[in-house]
Image (cartoon, rainbow, N blue to C red; front, side):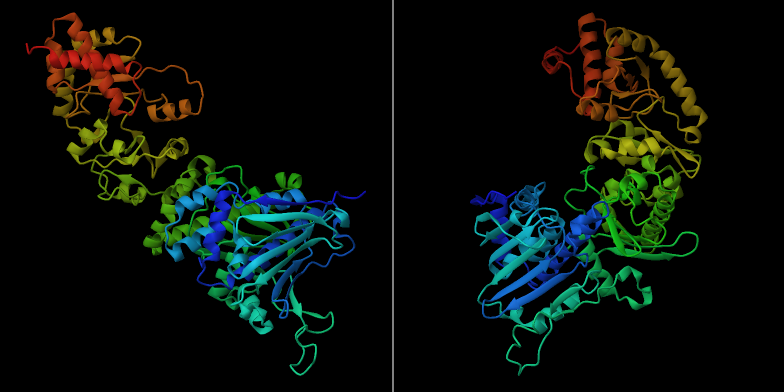
Length: 636
């Protein structure tokens, strides 16, 4: 069977053209890293072949030795990077090469700042390392064939990076990918074999596959430029870095390996390297990135942990190795006990992997704990990037709930900047005498939380309240119901009980005023029937006339709005309207004899409370009519 031979010219997407122009015009201050990116991609292609060949050995096509080769031709002014990995089909070339960062290119450009160092970091986050080739090349030619397809299914991709590329079907005897860089006139340094070896040893020394270059001949040898006749030598160490003793690995080597395994252009924030021997033998080298990737909130994407068995790559993005709330962790796990033919189905029911996962999670949480205690500023930088993800932890990881809770950070009414920098230990340590609960409020924004009428009595008494304004907070609270033996209590749920923070006189005064306003509450309840469950007098308000609360065991209003926004049908659950007996509007309403005006005022107090919660009015026009009528009514 033969493939249809045809050639076509296709345009890059608009964002791709913009990105290529950006890279060509010296976005990178350190040009040599393009070679690291191409070698890293080639190494990944070999790893993917090794994984797929576990179930289909024919993909090796009789050649199981995997390697990456780098060579240069001074006369032709080309630099070539070749691998014998998985290769690509024609459609895969279009999907992965013709389109840059499919799911995030627009966000990438929205994030650009114009600062060269800052924008360089973004490149790593958006997975566009292949295009770094255009920093030094005026034209790039890629020839590839996917393992398992016949030689007639080769594909050649070529582009100058100016806005379009050509794609044609060509014969290709060997599987894998060859990338030829036609270098710019001022990039002679990358035609020097010594310089290339230096770059490879600096950036790719820990790539576990051999990176080969032609054997260099003495300078007086006529064929010195071309190297030995078909002879290749391994340039990098080609040894798994994670398998080496920790004391032999430098900080620079750790950082460079992270860049390789995470495809990040920036050094990691921290790492943990552990080796366990005994009934379970495995090595884990895990990293915390400095920056959140653009697809951090895509829960369908895989996790960034590579699984090896006795130094043999098995699979990437193994979600069984790290829970979802730690999906930002990058690194490798290498086991001596798992079978080499392990599959995803086997992983679903493997107890050994459960042990590895549990220990790896504890190592990461321990690393974060040490950072929070010893380097609080560094931890605050981590929290700014990954705090919202960590908040998923209490609900997803019951076994480590207490340790996760210690790592959480919150904004509170006592914080001046509004930043999430207060731990639960900080909160508990400064609780008032007699306070037996941790109080919190949920809202749609930081400003709405800080200005909520529910906080009025707490401000009056100087009681600290956690301000929760992120969508994930409601999910977090399903798993975080208490801390240090103290229950978490919403200030907008149930009847307010301040426990030992209230004195006997305050309680007597509330009983008296509740009886005094009992008739008003019942009358308002009748007027607002169907809209509220009941109307009652409260002491949680000092400045506002009214507020809405729900019963202790009912769904909070913020969570209800969140679920309704996703299209879910939520059973009706009218809130409770609480009124402030000290407010002039409530006192005026108590004296109101006109039935129409009373109804208008009752509805207005309800609607004001609804708006202060960020809610939507059923009939905004009616609210405006009532407001205008009451404003224009003569004082009486």
